Length: 600
Image (cartoon, rainbow, N blue to C red):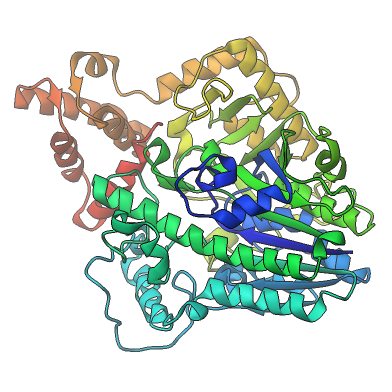
């Protein structure tokens, strides 16, 4: 028996023809759907990249205990379990964050691996001279925050690397799939192997040979405008369209690479004995809900309701759709079961063997999210996003024995006061470091939202339904208990730890949030607010110390009286804020203020 897993990064389900898209040129994804089972109710678990990959290895949630980081010493790793039990495992990837500090223990769980360099400013090719950067290219603002000098190196390095991409075969995605195809060509007649072909694409930036841009004609006017920022959509309509179609160009390149794998499956009749899984870690917002990218906003379905295709040669089911609620944590148990391996007790995921065969349900509900942001729960009909109980997002801790961030180790300031936590149920008796999270972004502004996604699939109108919210809150609490979530996670989002949630709890929480996230009732009702100005002022006031709030509110009242105006414009808010922050911090404050002001 053999398994091929193709893992794409940041694949938006709504851009794939099998899920209803009519303008993307991706015939091989349609071909895949005709030769596999398609899942329409698959959800991510922990976001973004490495948290998701930890779930792929371990079959359990990451986000309740830890943010981005390596595999832990106590983690069960699916590829390693296979390797230790006679199944050869191979990884071909261009995901450059495997060789950053926060991803350093994943690839070495495989029997062998091939690392392809050059994606997203990967510190790859050495060049002292500053590269030529086209005028129509735009650097995302986040690359220059908070340390302009340090993070600008990503932008510089990106353009050093791009000089190496002269032909299609030179691009990291092409080289990654070539490595995977070479493995198949060499080993298709052998038995007992697992191959993971992992493409960083269609993750941004959207760098492609010109032939893929040509597929979308005049929609792409700036071929080098290919890197959307992690912020609300503020670009003009032409640039918005340009970025969307650049994503489409890269997705079409992904489609060609997928087709090359399907061709080998056909050529060697591997459909008889080879499981094929095509999945992603999470989606990506391309203007939906007024946002680009991920991380900065609620976990909308475009980010977490992900595409999934599975061919199981035992049942030979194809061209069918499955509606059962499944997750990324199910991949490890599914693969282990396929090879006849025992599933470790700490894996929360379920084997999808019978779900592939006949849509057998494996769960009633699931949870998902980012560490320290809203905790989310869905039962397939409702999506419940539970926000912080107060606007401090505290308490919040990291529990780890591997204290690294994405591209750095934890700082001395973070580590000097860490505590030792008692073992969790899944740490195999190991105690962990308990490290306080400092200076976390303020996702409290989104509060708590409930959506009926059957009636409102695009999550445009949150509903108020206390009875349903009680049910979803208790479902969330139950799943957190089963995950052995830290006690403070309940406190942070205002869920009772030692009893079930009641209607009174829900009502009091909503009233408390409205109180906390308000400016002044007189100001709110007596002034006319243009655009997003009320949220911008509220966000700024909530950025400061509690003791300064009344002072700021009075100053804003006086400001509007002096102007003899009842209309609050963007320029008034900008001037008011800039007068109250020092020159060095103004660009950063204004950038994050724009983010913090979003409540939808």
